[in-house]
Each structure stands twice: as C-alpha cells, then as structure tokens.
Length: 225
Image 1 (spheres, rainbow, N blue to C red):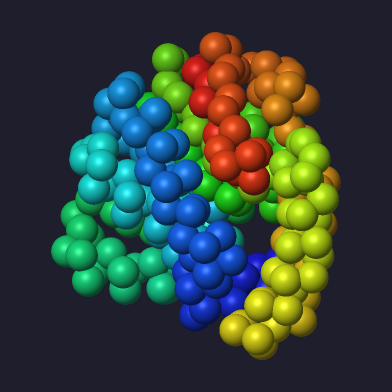
Image 2 (cartoon, rainbow, N blue to C red; image 1 turned 180 degrees about the vertical axis):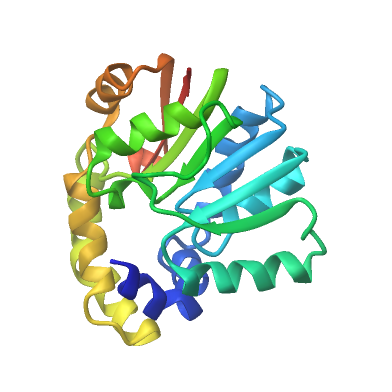
C-alpha cells in the first residue's frame, strides 16, 4: 500500500481533480465548512496524502495547528512543498504515522479528519478507535469518502466510469497499472450511510450525521466524541 502511494504521489492531485471533473474541490469545501462551525484549533488530518485537505482547512478554518499524518513519505513530500509555497509551515506539519497505531497521546486534538483515506484502513474499527482515542472529549471526527451512488441510473453509470474510465486514466497519467483498479474496489467494499453510522456508534462516537454529495458519489460523516 505505502509503495503504491509513493509511486503515484507526483500525479495524485492532477488525477483526483481530473477524475472528479473538479467536483471534489466542492465536496471538500462543504465538509470543511461543516467542521468549521465547531472552530477546532488543534486538528489531526489522517491519511493526509499530499495535504490538500489540510491546506483547505488552514485557509477556511484557520486553526492554531494542523498535523498531517500518513504512511507515504512520497505523498507527504509533495504536501510539504505545497505548504512551503503557501507559506503555511508554521500552521501545518507532517508526521509519518501508522494510522492504526498513532503515536499521539490520548486527547491530543479537538478535531480528527480524513478525506478519501479511511477506506484504505486495513482494520476500520481499530482505525476509528485510534481516531477517537486522540480526540479530546467533545472533539469532532470528520470523514469524507468516495461512495458508489445508491440509485439508478447514476449507480450504473458510475460503475462503468469507475471500472473502465478510472483505470484507463490512471494508467495514462500515473503509469501505474494497479492504483486505479484498486480505487473502485476499495470504494465498493467500504460501508456506506446507515451502515457506516452504526460502525461509528460502535467505535464510541455520538451525534453521528452523514450527508451525500452529487448523487452519492461522495459522502461526509461528522461525529462527536
């Protein structure tokens, strides 16, 4: 997994925006604004990748500090350069972390976020428990994930797009044969909507709410410790 993300790091942002036709930027903004109402000051961004979500939170929420955590040094290297270009080194830092075994003490953050990364957890329940552990009491969890649309005809159209167009674009742009065949498989295996809500409650979260974006192609989950 780490090696795959290291390989695609240079083209990751370009492909994300290309495959979503740029709509992913709007999904991220809506999610960040939902979290911003709670005014978190210390934020941990899990599976931060190239730091897109951390940078957006820095601009729209303006917290004291954001820690981006990821297993891929290749991804974070791209993220560090983007943060440097925006002059936000004092607000955003990056740490190499195993998201299932975080090194941070209990209650270190008042918000924990993950945009399009939780579906990659090898053990979702353990990952969610770790995210809850490092949250302070009353802190908020924000997850945004890609999800197959639930209804006809978008469900069928998206299946064709995910299984035919995405892998083709991935191979052409990233020159990686595995990464973008993995993507639709991981989306389809990830729990959705009410099922994910139940999993979050089981992990110890309360006040769980979720919202679908753009026919259900992306879903936001917001919960409280």
